[in-house]
Amino acid sequence: MPRAVTLIRSSSLSDVAEYAYAATAPAEARLVFLAGACPLNEDGSTAAVGDYAGQAAKAVENMRTALAEAGATLDDVINTRVLVASTRREDLVTAWQVVRDAFGDHDVPSTLMGVTVLGYTDQLVEIEAVAAVLDS
Image (cartoon, rainbow, N blue to C red; front, side):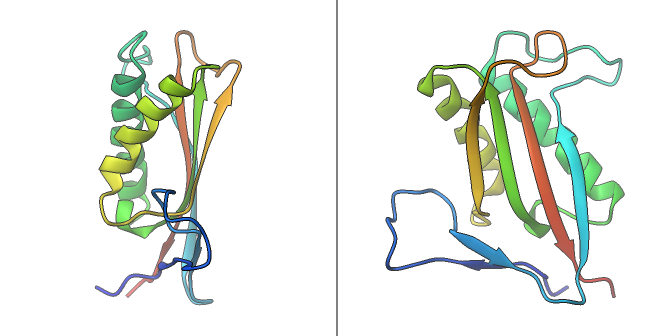
């Protein structure tokens, strides 16, 4: 199945960033706007309390589920924003590495942000995403 998302890289910008600098989708693509994927278990409890990597993994798992419900996969994501409740760069990097590894070669444009607090008790990570799908 053809993908709607085209990742754009720049030879004029640093190659240190582990993501494409831009992405496009054709006009006929259906956009899927996801709520922030949170590290919540089915019962509503927060997974992996105190563990940035564990919460990032659970948030990715939940994002995959939401994408599937919308007829999409991680390969259809066109942009992400990873929110990490910390002022320590090391914590942001820990969460980012989990998210980055989950996307593999599909290195979508992303923003990594440290925030003061997230919405659920003991929540450390949240992932916002937009996907683009070509319906057949």
